[in-house]
Structures are given as C-alpha cells and as structure tokens.
Amino acid sequence: MEVEYSERFYKNLKVHFKNFMNTFYKIDIKGLENIPKDSNYILAGNHLNILDSWLLITITDETLRFMVDKKLYNFKLGEWFFKKLGTVAVDTNTTDSAKNYNAIRTAVKILKDGEKMVIFPEGRTHNMKVNYKFKDGATAISKLSKTVIVPFGIKGTYIPFTKLEIVIGKPIDFKELKINKEEENDYLENTVRNLEPFDHSKVKKIEDKKQLKKLFKKKCS
Image (cartoon, rainbow, N blue to C red; front, side, top):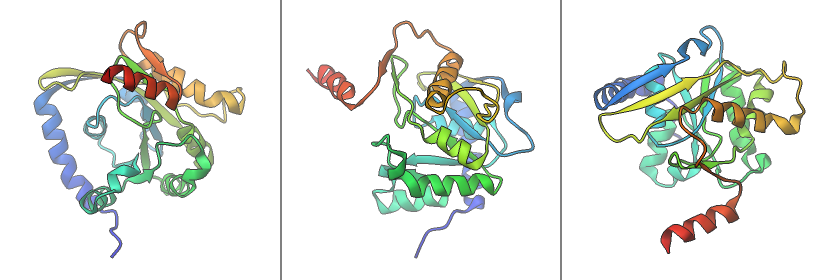
C-alpha cells in the first residue's frame, strides 16, 4: 500500500522538533520578514547538518515540503517516515536535471498547489570549512512553477547549547532579473554565500566529484 503524505503527521512532529531546537540551541534569526506571507515560495540555502530542516521548521509557522536525498528511502521505515512527512526524493549524485524529472515534476505540482518547499541545492551536508557547488534543480523548479526563491544562510556547529544563526534574504524572482539562463544558478549560489554569517576566506569550494574524492582520500590518509 502506497504511503501518503499526512499534514497532521507533519504538524504533530513539528511540535516536538520545535521543542527540541528551542531547548538545545539559541536561535538567532535575521530577515524573517523576507518570507512571503500570502504566497508560495522555495526556501533554498546552505546545508550544514541534517538538523537544518528542523531549524527551518522551527522558525516558520508554515507547513514546509522538503526535497531529500533518495537514499533516505532505501529502508522501509525511512521510506514510510519521509513519505508521511511529504518529502520528495531526489538523486543528489547527478547534476543532470533530466534524471530527476519525476522529482522536479512533483515539486512543481506541489508549488502550483500553493504549498512551500525547501531545497538544499548543494545536495549534501558539510561543515563550515567546505562549500559544494549548487546544483540547478532549485532554479529550474522556481522557473517552471513561477515561484520565488527565498535564499538563506546558516551558521552553527549544532553542538548542543550553542548558537545557531540563520539569515534570510529577499525573495528572488528570476523573471525580473536581467541575467542569462546560464548565470541563474551562480546568482543563487552567490546570494546564499553572501548571506552565510561566517568568514569565507578559508572555505574550500568543491566543484565536482573528482575534487570530492581527492578531499576524501586526503582526510583518510
């Protein structure tokens, strides 16, 4: 039997997520007023920890739908849980949007139905010493659904009882920007990097899989 999204299930868990985050972290929010109140939107930003999703759930009263790595669906319990939460599974190991056609189509429908989505364009978590190049799914979904992107930047180690900072930028409407299609993804990434509330001078940017494998081997040696 196919598992269906349950907003009631989401809202029940949301209470526990918020209690957890507000108990274990001091959350500093800037730019909350930039989130549209009367329309749908895509939240897109950096991805430091799996708890980034709990942080976003905590700071807004809206019901959010998340795009997640399809690996979370590999086990029956995980598949049941994340489908119940209304997530959309995406292959994060590819930069080819065509290979994620079904996921993109589902996301576009969700947004056209008036709901809100969260996308982490880096496709993986990382610490504050590394950045991963943005994949183009968020910009593609934004244009197909005619939905603005609300960029955000997060800073924090997620060590209990430390501060988490999140800065939310003004909505991006690519219809109003006079830039080439090839520049849109870089525009989004640069916007998010400028919002990230930490020093980027020592941050290493990972551009592709070869560079990632090289970094991994270096850490393991």
